[in-house]
Image (cartoon, rainbow over all chains, first blue to last red; front, top):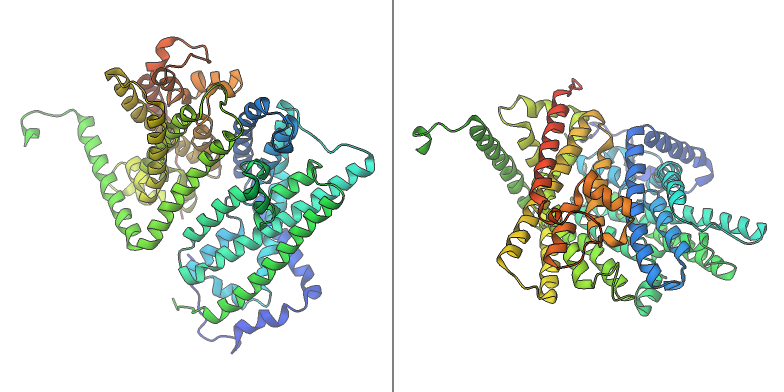
Length: 300
Length: 281
């Protein structure tokens, strides 16, 4: 069993420096990060029973929630700017995104938290790579697998039982919507990872990161629009929530797919996601620098 | 002392031993979790707030409508409260069983099996987490508000049905946890399947049956009998007409459903644990 590792003779007198010096050359390490992402994809693809169990559960939840939305939208058609078909699509797309964006926490967050507690994180810090980009690559690989497996199958089942809305309009408009949605989902996963990374790093100070995680999951579930479209909230709260980082996780990509964001609104949505991604990336870099100064590796 | 006077049946002694093992293991985990007091309180409150989210969704829905599936907000809150309360109690008592697949994989079930105590009791009490009471308390508060708003005319039979609802609902959800754990003996990775019955089922039961497709509701009556947790007793307690189309006595049949569930779960557990093969690590 893995114990916390502390080399008796550190190979480098200032070991924690190395990743910082190399992180300035992303081009050279692009292949490395691609390999990390591929490895992570394959790791999750290995658990076939878990995948089918998850697909089943996502589908069951999709049905339950879809019926509740249907009951509401039959009373109030066009509520929040969605017609019934768009609202039902919103439910099933939300279920499809649940695992890729790890709305309930998890993904590499589980790995980082466990490694902080058992001390294996010390080994990670020795690696001549940028920690944040390393874990980001791993999470993107995981999200890719979850999108293909747990995203697509429930969506297809939902499409069999409910009338879902696919991108409409001229071929060019459709292509733009699909392209926009793809970019938006990638940014959604990135923003979600960056938030989970910040939450996981608090484990260096708190030792038990569960509390922080719970708070972030609650905020994320609600303000991402996963539970209900944000436009259903009281107007002031809705307007604020649309600008918060969590909106980048579910609300924006779904609105892009449902063509509620086209033209300038589409660009604005993507820019908001990009802005939050940049801001959180910077925050993560600052925090991980503080971590390196803080960490004490206990022998064992 | 009474034991020496009359010989108790063998199951009595076994059950008492199992409960004692449960109490010992759970007590140990309780003391362990209370050692990190801040963490305990944060996660307990966190649990309550997480389960509150579902009610926030219902409340937001009722900002846009006065009834959902023909039920008012206090009536839906009754469903929400009873569904969450019974799931919460079952989760508190035996929810740890959903980590069984992990224990099968890493071989630590062996440790449990060599101890001279019932495996089910030990595994149910494993990592006993009082923080799960957060969900119970939160749902009790919503249920209390709902009962206050509904101003039900409490008669003796109604009080009895209410008490039976809580007990039988907990047994039905608890059986789902046990059956789900038994399934993990065969499919160690498939822990998530049971979430669709436990957490998914509880989500379904938060909303009136009239919201769902007829076949789905029939499945919840005759298939996996979740309707007996709160839908059917609620029809009696709230004095509502039956949208499901089942015999009237079904409203009082929750004990029968709970008994069937517990028996089925027991058989599943037996089959599961007998098929267990150690990983040998």
